[in-house]
Image (cartoon, rainbow, N blue to C red; front, side, top):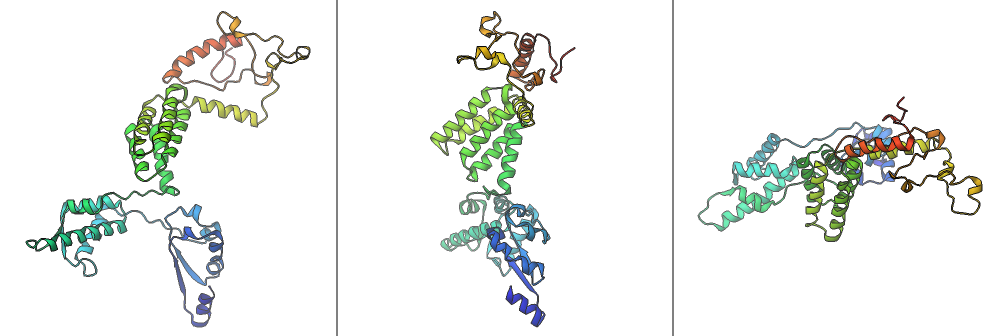
Length: 360
């Protein structure tokens, strides 16, 4: 920074400071750039493959103009590769590239120019070596087979700590929730091929089975847990099979978020102080003197009732009539909903509405 300041004050020379992968700079290192940027000693141009909102300190980000570089489309990649093949600074026409090979390199690059050029360089080296070994071949030709042998796997834009990680797992979860097994399997494959920890995937499947399927198909959670256990025991590549099985089952299962809505609603009440005292019939009565305090007095043992359900107030007086679990009519919850309404008529002694109010 001192040199940039001297160049500006003594010689009128502006300094452009380019920093690649600024996300690798620590907070203290980024803080050291602030004086130069604030006072105009340098014009800072910084590049990062991470989300700058998380990887660049706020004072530096607020003084910057943010530009996003998008992946190249197929036509742009084809133009780049063609120029590299013919230009003197590239291959200078020493190889011919078939349409099949061009299409393969474009697909393998996934919109990444550097990846496309690397694929071309590798394929061209192989083609030149084959042409040199074949005395009858006058020209090196890059074919689809040559590309396949030189570059055997497509580039996945996926960083286990970056935006692509969160975008893909978000798409995976939303595909499960949206009951699209094909899309869910696709995103599962992307995570597996990118090297994602299969235990992380298994955890997300368990969470989704409980959160978005819930009581509509309780078996979904059982299968998700089984897939997680199998993943832990056998590892990849075989773990891809139980993970795929759980993914397809959950994606095609009926959906309900009534369970998470119930617990979140109850937690909200508790945090807001809406809980009251436990009714005396439900209080602990196992110790001497409890009866004198009224604990357990009036408790009705459900198994003593022919129906297995007794009329009893279980919530505090302040919460009488409050409903948390409101089952849907999807899958298994249809039967649960019908059974629950019958149970509540007995427990409360009168029918109750779905919003928690008395049906009067």
